[in-house]
Image (cartoon, rainbow, N blue to C red; front, side, top):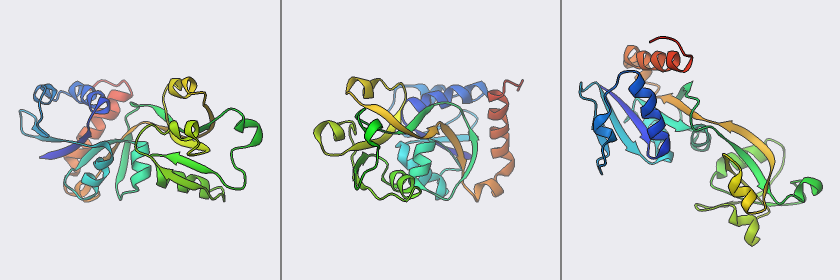
Length: 212
């Protein structure tokens, strides 16, 4: 049996759309339910539904052989995994954003405060440029940071940019593009190589428009 960890929410739905095109019967998991573990009818695949930030944890420890998570989650967690495939779904980007006047004055001055849900990514990003910042970890709407004076800028995910625009903020720097990635437990790739490779190859052909 192969166990796949899926992040609850829209990303799980988009991933299941792809897996169904591989011929997997996901009718049980599609039903409204509070269940967290599902098996395909043939018993070959088990799915566990977890919080997005927990996907890399389940995969690293081998509770899941495969996981689907956003690149932002993988960068923030920094777990020991094999990143095998870009699924090209859940596309967005990580950016530094703030008030437009910072475009003229520059993002960095003597010291700034950055509000973010991604303290590790933020620390690595600014330290790679030799810049020290105060990082304020928020779990809710980070846009409130500059709006309330809590922070100078934010580092967050942007999809359409609508929320930024509605709050008078703009993208100051693009950190990196984000999309969903398929990751694999390092031991599982050896012990269940053929089964995992079949899933990865099927998804790769699907994404490249090849006949399955």
